[in-house]
Image (tube, rainbow, N blue to C red; front, side, top):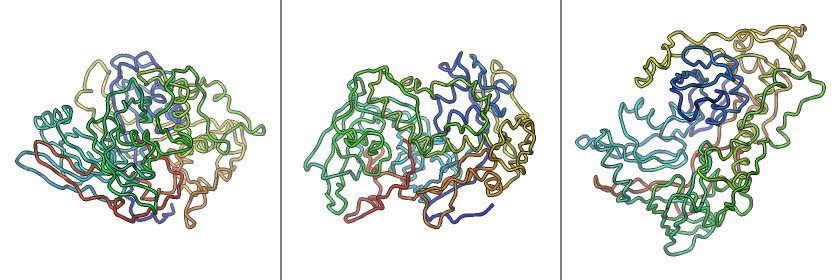
Length: 515
């Protein structure tokens, strides 16, 4: 496979197979597994989850699960995924202070790194980095920063200290200070925002100002206005610790963080960008998520349809009826529209409509191989979940190629009933596979001039492979600067983007960033 030069400032790891094991959660009971995973997780398309289940990579109590398998109480679920961890910044995690006597760490977390493994992130999470690169096998993340937020974190190394420090955070006795860059000329003097905040979509991590939300208070003070970028550097003191509190309060005040991909995106919020809040009158209106016109995958009348796909019922995620399922209050029509557009933007960025064409044409299946078998976590070693599965998941069987339109005879022979073994695809290099699927060479308009001219696909799971993002798109202008606690006062250096006269590339590369 050709190796393309990566831009400086990124840390990457090759894709790898990873087995994930969990016990059935109460809210999953009595539901089909495809409906569960497509609703609970949004890092891949609903069609991908259906395709993965058909490939036999998910087992329940040691038996292969199919899309319509019902999850029951006590079920132990194991899913083997091909992890494509997104690039993160190459800026290292910095240990500011290690108190060996009182047993805690103070670190400076770069933006782009999540605290815990979630979604597509595992080895690129803070906990795994501190374990694998610094040797800290046990630590407690009592205060967490958003993935896109950089700055100071205090990490106890013992349970007792974690409990006492967590109580300080809960009681509001810890003084926190952040620095941010926001749009426009922020008002001079102290500005206090006390709007309550509510999480209305857990999978997207979306929060809004809502009267039924939790109390929140943030105190802002302008440090400096930069006329060259029409932005302000501001001090932010959150008196409470709500999710996305500073980001949402700044949006409400009409001064969102300019490179915030969620709360400062016109495509999601409209020209007003959520200033003053949104309508909260409940509505039953829902519509199916749909990609933009240029990514629509309407059936080609000249291409035979796949009868298997014709009979597939639509999932709540595909009809839009899952919007609001995780919300504590009924959603307004405006909130539903915002969530729908946010989801569409993510799916567009992930190229799921193009992925669908590749999979339906290639007719291959996921075939996990060469991955370490992770032992079950101690809490999952229980008899009620069935026997522990020791053997690797069964290899996928051959799949009938029901449609050969547009596929080279080298991939599928002339017989309509031909079968394509998975290895006939997975042994190809990415370039060879793309060469055999000429209709799938779709240009990427947002690439750098010297970047590859086509979208490439993973030869093992067919996921779209994208050009790496610009390093400056991996974080937002929000930094935890200083904490004052019973353990002492700790602070980091000011981020480079807070310097006077600092400018950045404001052209969008189309990348989607969540949470």
